[in-house]
Length: 390
Length: 94
Ligand code: SF4
Ligand code: SF4
Image (cartoon, rainbow over all chains, first blue to last red; front, side, top):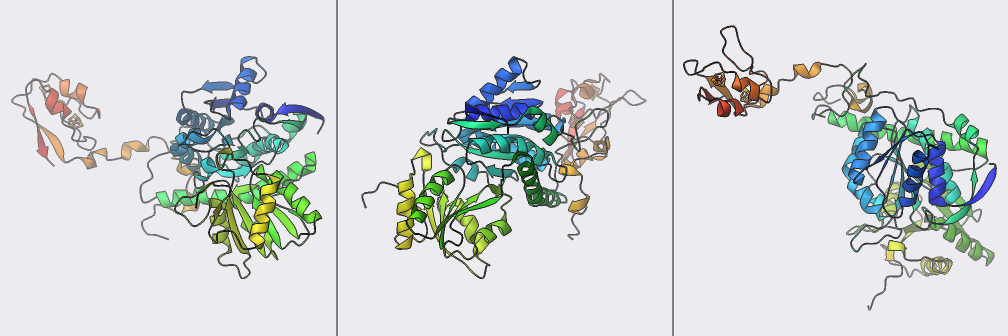
């Protein structure tokens, strides 16, 4: 950690990608991710970054090009958002199925219709089961650092899976924050050059992505799933190493607030910062309150999460996506399923908040807490702030 | 373990890649067909057009100059029969 510089977070992410010395960037610009790939195209054009920049005609092609270049042994990066991520959908499975360590920033944004360019987690929640490692950044510093760490996690030979770093659109991507940049030689020491395990090489021909007949498909999926499950240990290891080197501790699940709180908020992404402010203020007025942040979403860190909520009486899960027709939001579903076979279960409240960029303030969190305490929340889920005549 | 599986998941190559080149030649692509070409040698003028048009490249000239299809690879599409200027080829039930 040497120089702090005030910079838009998108540009800090682009800087991280440059410092990771990627070989290929294939991307299509989509709001609010655009500034990242625009900046990268400038780096490539002016020779600051020695990489191929592939300006494709859609996100489907961006991910296809990323799959091809990663398979050829190139360190590969792309970024997307909302409809763009949805357009990549079918190729996302191919990237994980072929075990290609592509790094992608997802600037989280609501899905149409109606068209919304603002933040929620509807885009990534529709992509829960693609077999990618998925982490969430909470602020600009974290977005910058996790982007570099992501390459090391993905390219580890015990992992070899694609990874997406989720950053809340606009709330993070377009914010100007003081960022501590790491010296290039420190980055180089942390992140060795990419050594692929298997590549497309005319000297040693292989077939990647052949037909998976019923006699092999299940085994293939199992291999991919097991790699994802095993990646949790590598994510922990790489983040611990990062902490040692750069004095920033990133845990898979982070707990803040009172030492043994009765109630905890559970958040993911940038909203955690606002939650924490509310928690601090409520604590000062004598409430026993805490906060649990989920940093690693896939693979879900089950043990770490259970440990973070043990002895808690009540949890308020904040979701930033709807799961229409279900009994709760996606994060709450995950937690309810996890707690089903636990002997001790806290009461679960689920609030779906901040869809399509609706502001959720410190005041809102205080109100949520009060309503949870008074049992005024819907037993399934409450869509926070929805205006109704009823 | 299922007796239908080719091998245990731990034994699969990374990403289910195939690392032994050339084994596509073992694929009996011809197994899928329901019709196969049958040449009437009385009508055939040995022009070789059927061989040129076959999308599977499975028609080659034999010693007597005729153009029989290799049914190991023929997919039964009927293109050869359609292109033959002498209507020498009929597509017959497998
Ligand atoms: S039927 Fe089709 S595949 Fe078979 S020999 Fe004729 S052209 Fe070739
Ligand atoms: S196209 Fe017809 S005539 Fe020509 S070689 Fe083939 S079968 Fe014979």
